[in-house]
Length: 221
Ligand code: AMP
Image (tube, rainbow, N blue to C red):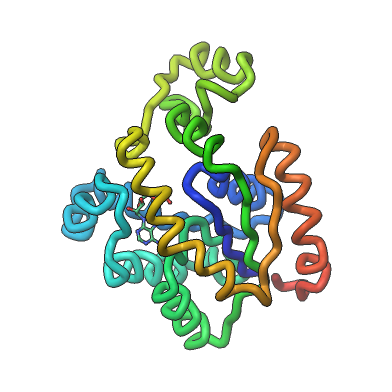
């Protein structure tokens, strides 16, 4: 199964894609995570990508495709994957089509998580990762017991460098300008899901939206 998760920054793509990976085994492939790893490892690609990421702009297609191509060649992606944060523009959608077409593959579904812009700002400014467990949390929305569990595990709540108000505003503008047009591009594969609510509730909607695709999938994925 090859699925794309579309949605604005903060819509919950990462959270939902990880849940789906946990349930069905297809790896979540996040270009944002791949880029952040390259930046923290100080690779030449990471050094080239950093300025665009800090400004909330898109990194060049060439750099992103290089990371993605390498990642999708790994064996765990053979039976499928969940793309999170890619493609983000029409040109990336075209490049993805070519990449998959070269190996006789195609996308099975594109899932759009719909969340009101006002909520996105609060979700993004409150977003933290627990340094001990790696869990994604939110200081405004996570249940107090989850925040307490992170403290009890000795975790620090780490904020992403690009989750500042100024960068967030630009990332939302970039989404509207460059990524939203993909809803039209993928109209034939698109399933829209209301992304408001607790992650568990949203995940139920995700599963319901993907049900026809999951049922139609061949046994080998
Ligand atoms: P994300 O974690 O998906 O919010 O991505 C964080 C940042 O990484 C974005 O604001 C971009 O600067 C960069 N990025 C992630 N995915 C892409 C992509 N598909 N194309 C270009 N830049 C990307």
